[in-house]
Structures are given as C-alpha cells and as structure tokens.
Image 1 (cartoon, rainbow, N blue to C red):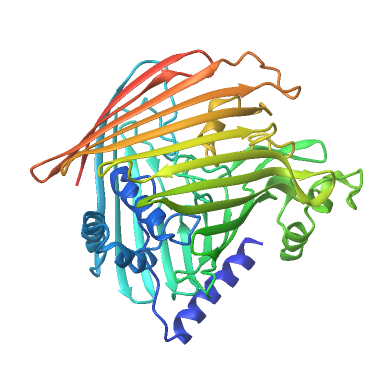
Image 2: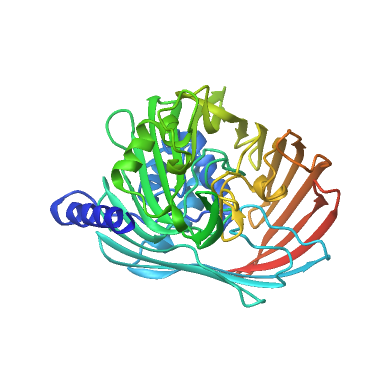
Length: 481
C-alpha cells in the first residue's frame, strides 16, 4: 500500500514538472515557528480573503495577495515582503532559534509545539532550503533539545508545478482556518513520513485548493485485531478541498483516516476508496452497516466542514470562522457527522493600528482521539495529532470538553511585540470514562518579543492550573536569527 501510493504521488509530481510550461513549486511560510510574523500573514489573509483554509501557506500564493495591500496597508506589506526576501535566493537558512527554559516540577506539553515539553531546559531549531530549479526544492528543518532528543519536522523534497506540487518527506499539515487549534491535524505532534499533493495556484474562478497526503505513523503498540494486540505502523491519509463561492466566503471539506498497521496488515487502494465513499460499511460493523465481520473494520476516520467569512465593519476587517468536525458517522449515515466538535472563531486583525484580537469557543463531544482499534488513540510519537487539548486528558478517556480561548496582541513599538493568550478548558464526563474528576483548567501564555540591535529576543511565560488541578509554571528566553 505504502509503495503503491508513494509511487503514484511521486510519478504524478515528476510528470507534471517535466511536461508543464507553467510556474514551478513554491516553498512554504513557517508554521508555528515565528508567531510575530505568522500574525502578520493572518492579518493579510483576513484583509484579502486569501482562499486557503489550511496551512502551511505557499509563499507564491501569499505574494500574489500581498500586492493587494501595498497601498492600503503599507506597513503590513513591508513587513511580510521583507521576511519573504530570504526565500528569493537559490538557498539559505530561513530560521534559527535557540531557547533556554526554567520550569517547575509539573511538566507540561507546550501547545502546538511538536511534542515539546517544558522540562527541556535548552532547545534549538533551524530551517533551510535549496532551490535547484523552478521545479525542485529541498527543505531541511528540525530541532534538538538539551536532553538529547531530536525533533524531525520540515524535512521534505518538493517537485512539480503550480497546479500539482508533490512534497515527499516530513511535511506538516494543519487542516483548519483556526489559528490556535486544529481539530483534525495540527503541529501538536511530530509529522509522519509521507507524500502530499497540493496546488500552489488557486484554480478556476472559485479559487479551488486541494491537498491529498499519505503517510506512515511511527511504530506504536496496542493495535487490536481478532482480540489480540500487536505493534506496527498505521497508515494515515489526509484530504482537503476548498473553494470560494464569493470573495468573502471560503468553505472547505477535510478527511483524515488512520488504518492498518501491525496484524491489521497493509491496506489496498480499493479498500481506501471504499472507506472514502462508504465510511459506514467500512468502519461500523453490525446494525445497518453492510460490514458483518468487525475484524474487517477499516480504521479510524474523522471529517470536518470549515467556513471562513472575511468581512468588514466600515474600514475594519474581521473574519468569522465556523467549523463542524465529526469523529465518526451518526445513525449509520454516510452524510451525518457523529461525536461532533463545534468551533466558532472571531479574528479582528486591527482593533487599532497596533492591536489584534482572536476569540474561539469550542464544544467537543465525546470519543475524540480515542479508538477501539488503536489503544494509543489518534496520536503520533506519544502526542495527539489534532487539538492541543487532546494531551490534556487521559490517553484513553473518551470524553469531550468546552474550551474558550482569547488571544490579544500589541505591536508596542516598531521593534517590540506583546502577545497574551488565555485558554480555559472544562473536560466533560461521559459514561465511557472512569475518571470523571477533572477540574476546570486555566492556561496562560505571555510572549514578549523585541529587537536589540541585530538580535531578536523573546521572553515566554506559560503558566496556569491544568484540568487535573495541578499548577504549573515555565519561563523561557529565546534568541531568533
């Protein structure tokens, strides 16, 4: 299965590169590496109605929309354009950061940080690229902690053109328009080895964007088959399709699938296709399903529908985000989402010339990130692959949550920036869990970044009281080149 799909994706990318006269592949903007710059890009997205509801963003597409704010928002245009210049070379280091961190004994996983924990006293990360020609780019990235642990992400080869770019390696995915969380897949866990197809240039008058990816998760225990457990590497499929019915409304559909591995064996292309078009008869044995033998269940599927409305009140732009995700089907129907997660977001890029505000309210029903076929749940290398909340509950607790988040930022001066994020989490007990004694959690992140001569420095506080009632505190100091 792995070789089949990889072969198809690689062949498609190489064929496209060799036979097209269109523009080539594009490098990507950083994803959860440089929050000050990434906020500027989110401002651009809201103002221009940039059509993508997924990340990382292709630089070539961002540049196209950047021209629209050259006159109306010259400071925003200048900041983004200045950063992108580092990619307008044949090769180079685009990001280098070191961080020292002091924490108390109650260690926490840092949100959306690829499994990093506060106990890591020293951490460095870097990204670089080399563009051999317009059709081939090599991306090199990763991190290393003082405890000797390596973080493998962002290492992949891009081949193809603007309509079909193939990324081969450890390329990351974020299938949501939300900024601080992604229910389907995010950077909470390290990425898997795989291949991804996507388009750089939006297609047709509806600005259609697509993404199709296949990968193998890291080796994991507890894969259930025929009443026994085994160890193996499950397969993983991601799908995304978005379009713009109007210049102020972008809508997307997303699917992820976790399947096979261990004694469950390899899965063929026909079985993947059957799971796509008929998830009930692939994943739900008994009842009204055509699937009788529960050993033949395909695996673990999730789906979502996301909307972003880019609007304005007078001269003040803002985005409203509505997203509904489902961990399974409902009532044995292929068209009804089960175990739903609802998200409502509001992003105001300019409360004033220097301030922004991002609000998110989420209601997550039970059973997310757990599964009867995979005892480790929806995870890779020990971390849940979706919402950061997944690591704030017991690994096998099939519970839901109510989450409210607020993020305020202020460009204090041209060379200093303040960001304050607050999340409150109330885990919701259900009959499927044996630990109903969670408390309301409170999580506070304060980041102050400033420029001193040619150095970009930062102070980072992460503190609060988690859902287990345990207080935690961590203070970091970083230097960014």
